[in-house]
Image (cartoon, rainbow, N blue to C red; front, side):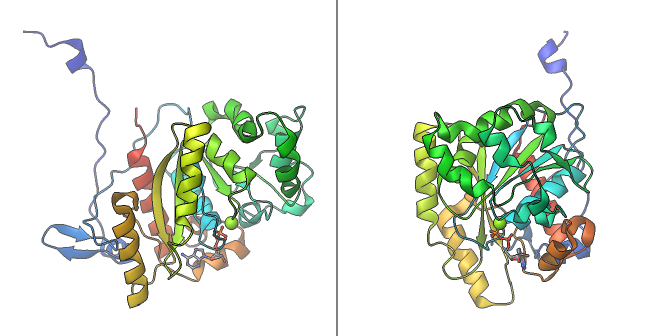
Length: 315
Ligand code: ADP
Ligand code: MG
């Protein structure tokens, strides 16, 4: 008997999961056990498939990289997760939404010399995105830069109608051209961050593995709940990303344990280790994936890219 067309329809091929080499096992902090590899979070590390090729681009998923604490790895994660996703053939847009402009600087853009930035897109309707967007050295990855001008937006937006939806309005027309948009938030929970949360589908929260890491997270989840209630009902937590992890210290391991206790499967399996190569990349103005392609940091962010893409809807 003929099978129905529904069952005959070809499903996308499941990409092969190549075996892990010893270097990757070490870089990802995996420990072999009877049930397979145990990751640094103490849970069995799933094998994430190689992201399949895309036949077309868009509509983009928008991720806000958010934590009101500074120095936890938001900008580093935006650059390197973005670059790793672009390596997998996805079109990526990084939005610098911090007046410090660290994302722009980290990608080699001299933000202070820019005439037009995301600020102009937010405040002026006669500016086109093409005047603002910059290509980066990573193929397939573009940047919406910012500089100190953006600090004025926080005050000026207060008097605007639909002030929380301003970034959403700017990004809307771009979504069909990209697969992933990552918004690098500033270290505060003010109006700019609320704009980012309103424009996003999901949130990644980088968390430095140190004693006070969990403090303040309640405030962030509170703001997320309010945004969900009033502005963006679909917003969800993509994951908590442990950064600057040092497996050699009892302290680091304890903090990670506490984070997993508190957030369970909300914590990414991938953990980013502490390495001086990251500060070096800022000076170099490029992602670690091109600056030191086989470093533990690069391996970590590529694994994170696979973990994030494995959660995205794949056609
Ligand atoms: P945020 O954007 O949250 O303020 P950054 O990404 O700018 O944080 O990181 C703060 C500092 O820590 C930077 O100097 C960066 O180079 C460094 N850094 C980030 N991630 C790591 C890491 N995994 N190991 C060591 N240093 C890191
Ligand atoms: Mg930053």
